[in-house]
Length: 566
Image (cartoon, rainbow, N blue to C red; front, side, top):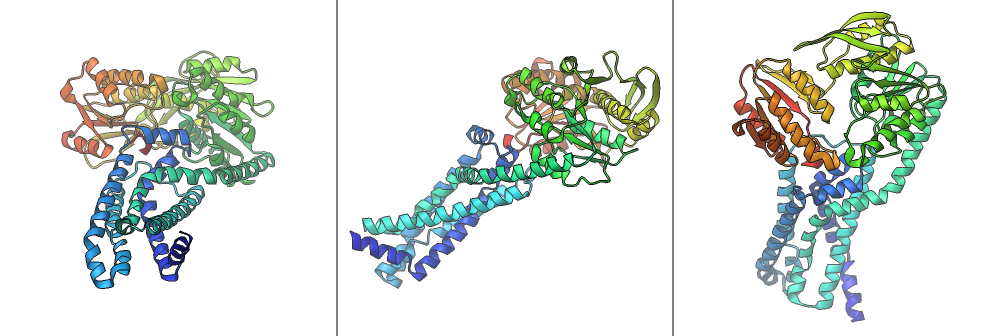
């Protein structure tokens, strides 16, 4: 036995054999890496959270594991067939031992072809949110590729060793066919790579946070923190535009509302900046506290609290407590601003003991409120009132009464910082439409297209319906429904369907995730079944839209789920 083991390892690590193994490892690493792109994308979109990632994997509607199983099965079957078919030919030409050894590699042709076919098929499906090529992603991919290479080499070694030990001709011929099982392991190997990198990522994150904290502490820049279940990005963009009338402002870009996202933004802070605005996102208790401790805002802004992200918070009380962490960690003499149009916001304002102001359309004793709101297809006009003493006429291209509420909140902050009503009005006139938030999209047809595809919620739906009602013509809504609502998700989507039935003429439901409850709500709300369409994906939904769309129609895209819901 021992001489057999020694001879097998000598053959394995001989120059020619080792070269063949390394080539196979390199090819398999490349194939399996590119076959894993969907898993890498979803892991990133899940915020590198294992619980969410495995929840997606375990979802019955997720087809990728079954596709991988099909790839493994077909590759394995054709691998065996090719090896068996070519074995006599190789043996006749090259001799018994060398021919049998050569024939054992022939099946890799089918494995490579099936893998390339799978990769090509998956690459033709465009991701809704493209993979963000960050340094963290690069580090993850490097670790992942190293693991794939090592695992392939280990499999080749073990399978070759077993073939020598068993000494059976069939085993020797088909020994490498088990490589075809690797694709089904890819999502789990990827997570192992993530777990290996996580201690390093934690150190890197702490390093960036420490640098950002020190930089903020060394400047006298005015710091503003904005949080809430919805409207954070909109209020941030509005406030940044208004304050830019008088000050040089640095704000976190897009939806950079995590500790690392904010820390990376702080890198661009310099002595010429007067104001720093940070959007603060949260998915669990303690998230806002960590951000507020790093930034120590002079001004805290709460847009409102609802059941968005209830899936991770668990209860609305947890959500409120988390949002209030901002006001518990303001800088000394910090000032709080609260929306008067949200009950939970008003409740948290009463809880805050520091200097505080409310703003909005509804409510009493607001620092800033709006009256004479007029909405049309081109935007809105209104009068902005400051403390009941000053008022100014304003107009904006933004759509929806919720935008006026956001403007009131941002204007209250700007007013307390030092801008005059006239300067605030000028800033409001300069506000541009915010991407994917009730934005009118240009097109070459006489059709109105409204893009409200960013992370819709219960309050956002109400605003979208208000906007939809301001337009004349047949209304068509495309939506996948609402997500991250935990136990109330089914009820919320049923009610969403009933709401849509009162405002839309045709509804195209996208994807299976919420389809059943939305369609039930639409039917119970009185919509005819023939006016309810279903599409498995947004691309197929757009195809349906192109078939039914006519001149004069109004089309609303309400929410668009990320790839981890598809």
